[in-house]
Image (cartoon, rainbow, N blue to C red; front, side, top):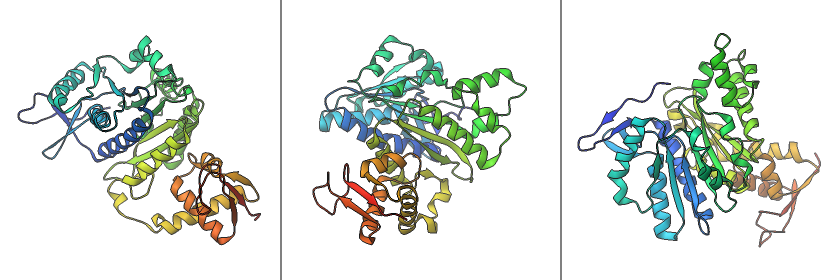
Length: 371
């Protein structure tokens, strides 16, 4: 995959990359979520942000400098330390020597603004994951670790990530470069590339997508990768990001967590930047359709709940856990839909967690009428 063009700004001794719109969206979502995650988990123990493909560290949009994910995370950690005394460390690894040296220059340029300064190493993600310190850290039940895994192309080896989510407090966001992966998937005459794909997916099922095209191929590959991640993580949701100026998928951000709250919060964060959607549609995303309107979303949720749970009794948490990573619905809209159904008489609720009969949360029971 071609690396971004290098840009330079007078007075800075480092290079920058163009700040593409989908990269901006990626940074907004990951940074906002990390702030919530570290606030919750950094109170009593050190919470670690592992940026596993550090990049060059800086971007240019018109004449404005923006910093990359290692330093955005460091700014969040600095704010949390100063305002809430949260304990957070930022660990960065970058294999390419040129990018690594550039990261150090960017760090020197902005370190005076940070009380939590990233620790940056020059090694591959694969080598970093084999270090005793890394293994001890992500296996420590008292050390929550947030992995941001953002490689170019399909260089990732699934064996390096499959065990991380077996530890309850770890989370990860992985950039699944769909456009690039799909472009080179017909590898019949390239055994080396086939081996690379086997390593990336952690299985050979991706071959089933080679004879598919368009949406069918996309759904197949995304489903395979999600299924692989769910062998370790309880909740996995892929967020689609399109090219800014084309009606075509660029990549997915897979969020993996073992906590229902984490999955729900990430969906809400993503939706907050995308007009209530859990996908980024580029400039086309500025156009609201009929089905983006609140009443249509709620109606869709109601239809799904009736079809799936007619005649059943479940807690609100059980409902959310069952559908949160299999649908586009966010928790607040699920709650709104059930409350409306309660008013319409299609469900009954029994208060367990909520303090008032108007509430709906946690272990509150929901009984669905028969069809």
